Structures are given as structure tokens and as C-alpha cells.
Image (cartoon, rainbow, N blue to C red; front, side, top):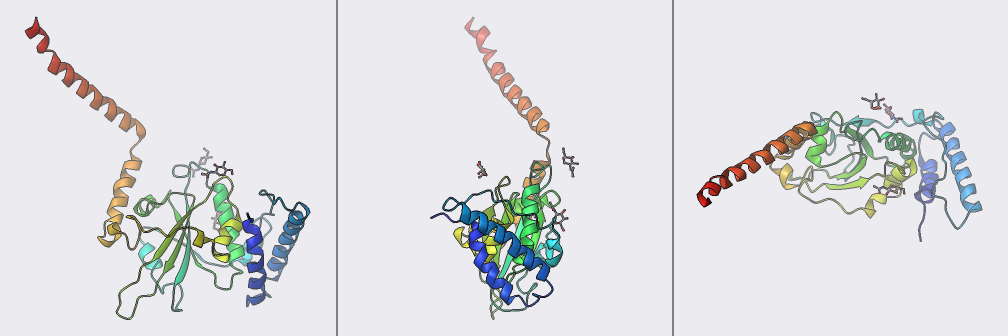
Length: 270
Ligand SMILES: *[C@@H]1O[C@H](CO)[C@@H](O)[C@H](O)[C@H]1NC(C)=O
Ligand SMILES: *[C@@H]1O[C@H](CO)[C@@H](O)[C@H](O)[C@H]1NC(C)=O
Ligand SMILES: *[C@@H]1O[C@H](CO)[C@@H](O)[C@H](O)[C@H]1NC(C)=O
């Protein structure tokens, strides 16, 4: 059975509302959320069983809900990412620390098409703020921090979900679980992003355990992921016309060498 992510978010949001300690402060927002979901439920039940995929949700940012979401979004950079993503940096509570990192880009790195995903992310913050245990949040802009994006092998628009473990008593650090969730830049919605946390939708995605894992991959363990990031980023900065000239130069060289190799053979045969 196929269920809309929106329907899955509803119950979580309902319980979250009851348990949220600052309910009074966010009351206008809660009412607004109830309002939207009322509309959505109505439109869903009237058109059941086919759930429309293009339910129009009022823009929470435009309607002023965003100011109730005072979740802090850290901006990850090459310089600060190690300190920001340190277990225990965001919360003092023991256990796993959940992080959601939104990877965005601009004209060069996302072809200027990350706008919808960015709006969805911004709106999802308001939804996740109502969670009992909101995740720690960060964003990474590949336009300004391309090296880090290449070092982690991520490309916008994408969501990185991480479970940072606390160091053990012997100071060794257990493995970090990382999942990369691709966002469809034409269809992504705020509820879809919020459901990754609220409905633990991240569990649908297999953890990444490859070469480029930012903490436990072989590159990271030998401290080579940032140099590799610089290297690939450097290549991406070379304009394509330089490649074209290089390729034509090489092929001409090879051709002329071949011709040069054949040329002496002709007089000899004659
Ligand atoms: C991105 O491209 C659009 C259209 O080409 C342009 O209007 C905008 O100023 C560009 N943004 C940046 C940050 O360069
Ligand atoms: C998302 O929020 C950030 C931070 O508040 C803001 O700078 C950005 O313009 C917003 N983007 C969109 C598309 O609303
Ligand atoms: C994004 O969604 C659209 C519409 O459902 C689909 O046509 C497109 O293939 C999707 N893109 C990706 C990368 O999955």
C-alpha cells in the first residue's frame, strides 16, 4: 500500500503538539498547522482512495510560521565542520545524536534549481520544531564550500542524516551512521523532509559505508578526504574549454606522431 508521507506525519505531529513544552508560545503556529492538515485531510478523504500527490499546502514561511521555529541551523564550512559535528557539541545527553544536514547549491553547483528544495527545507524546520526530540540541524552550501561537498561526495539537493555516537569510556569512538537521502528538486516537499525525522523515514535508506564516509571511510581515517576534496574541486573549477583545447591538442599530437611514424615507411616502400 502506498501512503503519502503527509499522512504519516500527521499522528507524529499530533503527539508532538501535546508534548511540546512551549505549546503556549507556538499556539498560533500549532493552530495554523492544524488548519493546514484539516484542509489536507478533508481533501484526502473526499478523494479517497486515490491520494493526490500534489496536495497544495499553504506556504508556512509566507504565512509567518517560520518565526516560531527557532531551531538553530548550523552552517557547515571546511573550517568548522569538525567542531560542529562533534558528539556532545550540540546536546549533553548521552546516546546517539541525530543530525540532519541539508546540502544546497547555487547557479554553478545546482544549476540554480535548488530553490524549491531550499524552501521545502526551510518550511520543514517549522514542522520538526514541534518534535519531542528535534534533530540537530545544519546546512552545507556546495557553492561556497565545494571542497567539503567533494570531500564527502555529496551533491545538492541532498539530505544527510547522521547518528553521531558519544565516545566510549575508553575514548574510542563507535562508528557514525550516515545516510544520504536524495531530494527530487522538482517534487520535494516540506512534509517529505520532516518525515525523515518525524516518521524515521531515514530507516528506508541503507546507511552509507563506502570509501567517502566522512568519519569512518578509509579516506577519512587517513586524513585524505579533505585533500581529495580539494583535488576534485580543483578539477571542477577548470572551465570546460580548457579541457576541449587539451583534448584537441592531445589528439593532434597523437595523430601527427602516427603520421610521422608512417611517413618514413612510404619512401622506403617506393
Ligand atoms: C543565478 O542565475 C540567475 C539567472 O541566470 C541570476 O538572476 C542570479 O543573479 C544568479 N545568482 C547568483 C548568485 O549568481
Ligand atoms: C531559507 O532560510 C534561510 C535562512 O533563514 C534564508 O537565508 C533563505 O533565503 C531561505 N530560502 C528560501 C528559499 O526561502
Ligand atoms: C523527480 O520527479 C519527477 C516527477 O515525479 C520525475 O519525472 C523525475 O524523474 C524525478 N527525478 C528524479 C531524479 O528522480
